[in-house]
Length: 373
Image 1 (cartoon, one colour):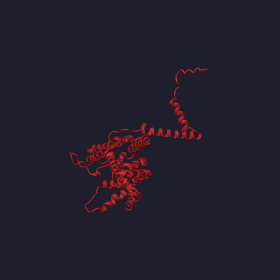
Image 2: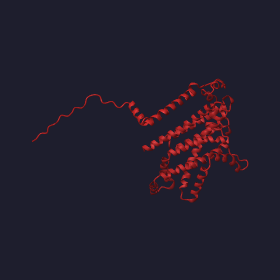
Image 3: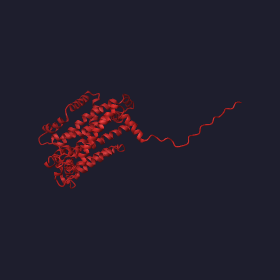
Image 4: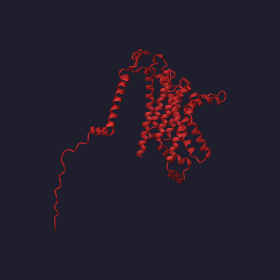
């Protein structure tokens, strides 16, 4: 009987394990792959770095190093002495209350400030999926009623303030929030109507969408401000802000309808057939199966529409409504600060950027959640 010789096994290596690649190695590999992959790419990268460096140094010197941040009283002589070498950020603390709240009574400006905070809190709560319940609709209703009570007043010791005194950031948020809050369900109904089997409903929805999308928003605002009162009975006058709000709702509904309709077309036909096989009604089928899938498909274009709509609220300046951009333009009518419009527009641009960037980041988070589900 033959015996099998057992070869001795190599002992396990004794000593420290090889260290992982350092962070600098990963950074070098990334730079080489993305910025310095070839000679033309390296030249373009160095050229862009030079241009960005020069621009960054200039912005630093103008916006920070040589800037004037505060002045005493309403004296802008220190800013005028710079002669454009540095920014005059002192115009922001001098005019920020008018920029943010317009001609709202000065002693009562805590009310629109509180309304803005309620809006922000409402957006923050609505962005959490754990709050997506039926109670959220009640919360929205209560918050909007509270905002209206704060802005109007007239009870509990609050002074009544007419809508022509409203202005600034609260007006922008009111137009955008109500426009999207009512325009989105309107867009869903119109999108479903365009896919209806009833010719009358389908034709009416097509006419509405093509008519609204075929004219600029400025035309709708002019119609709401100038033409609409001509068709009202004598003695009936609807506030200008409410007329502009209706125009925004109709405008948002038409554009959102096309976005939602694209999502409905992306839902597989089998989902409709499965819902019919379960015996679901038309509204149950769309509410429980079709619409949730359709909206997931069109999250990026929906958010793009929201962002564009939020910025389009600045067009109300054409009909004399003091939104955030209009109050900013009016704030620099003061001869003492007339030369420092750039700083005011930068301040307003930062406000717009914060809201739009927050919507963009939220949509990316929803996209990531959709990808993991």
